[in-house]
Length: 169
Image (cartoon, rainbow, N blue to C red; front, side, top):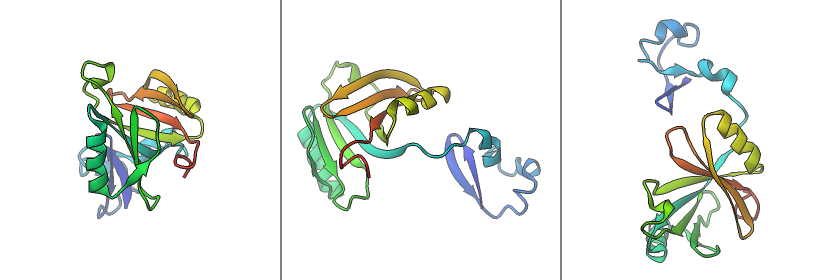
């Protein structure tokens, strides 16, 4: 199998005899899918891992109850204006519901974003900028610091310092 990318999604390509040996001849067969070899220079060791999905809500208790019932997650202690849920098995990413009132800057089209836990948020933010992301703001609340960015398509995500028992796994 050969890993390939198309439209920002990873695809595993199987059953294409000789693809690795003759990538150019098979590009038409793969309909424009960019091959992993095209990105070898850009590949680095993973520094990010999905850690938290943050959902905006005007009624966080209602939405947190919904996700708790749907996922079987249990409450995770956070400070206002956040309500958190954690996978009791410790395997799944955390879920956080944050209060966002209508008309606030965060009530726009981004209704959900991913928090990536990382040991060096600033270093990861610089790497993300090199790849085309834009830094929107830096935040420090409670015992947590993070950098809010948007990808080249404008989708927001956060690079969160992997500190604390629920963020360093």
